[in-house]
Length: 195
Image (cartoon, rainbow, N blue to C red):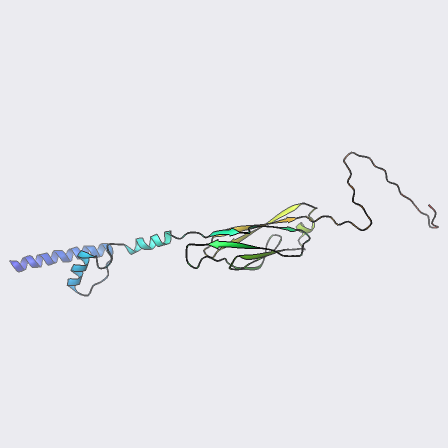
């Protein structure tokens, strides 16, 4: 009778352990005794946790980078010099506080370079018709997208300003009001030098 009770008790324990293992996907143990004790006390080292849930929590904790620094620039349309700036970046994930580098990438109106640390430079495409046709003070904007290694994006906006109109030597630039009248005096000379 005693042996039957013990056997029944052990069977119940084994069934309980099997249910726990099927529920929590427990790690295998070396002996039947270890299975019984571990599953009843600690769940075979799993502490009743579901690894899938833990992995999902780790994935959901991924946060985007924060990008700042020089995101605006300005250049005169007849300039051949590069303008430069520097971006900043912070990221909670280790190894992700860096940018995807660009090397002399063509933009709408120029060429852009960026290193992993955030230093950038921009030069105009002086053959671009939209730039060469700018009037004095007229503006264009070149919008450039940059990305961090975790795919967080930011934009750099370059404003291109039309250059002042150059004056030829000996000529004076004048302004004429609308609906105004003015006189021009001119001297004409014949081939023999007489006016």
